[in-house]
Length: 198
Image (tube, rainbow, N blue to C red; front, side, top):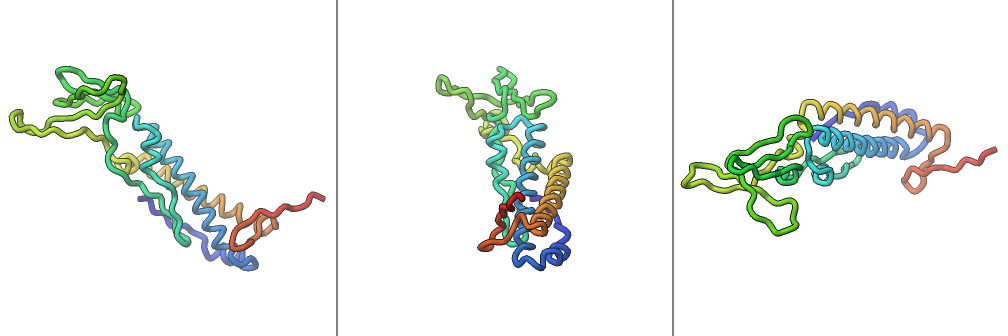
């Protein structure tokens, strides 16, 4: 999980004290937008390194969760089934090869195999034998979990930087909009105000 300290609370409250509820609404909306933007950077960065399907990555990231003045991006899910990576093929008798990373060599697994699967089905689980020849157990092959992919030293700093940049930008856009009258609080929500053109 990525945790970031958000600066400027007292300054925002002071600037928007004439607009009841505006400070909290501005901060909450800025956090939401920042997390959505950070989520997209996370997905893009993981996709640029790993050949995992976008649908699997999106499902494992989840949507931003905001409680009060705190926001959270949840990165969860189990390890990715290795058969979801592209170019999976049985290389008899040496094992199975598949493209786990977008760049570089294909991953090779010794003692792995793809069992027969129904005609027309392009993707199927593949398995690897663990242990000694006579008492080897068979297990499905799994790739890394999304948390491992995101924990990459190149990914996390980019996500954090985007969240902070977007938070600050959206927050000051909201403050300016309250101060110039293009946004107002109505029924506890930020509402765009139509200003007549004169």
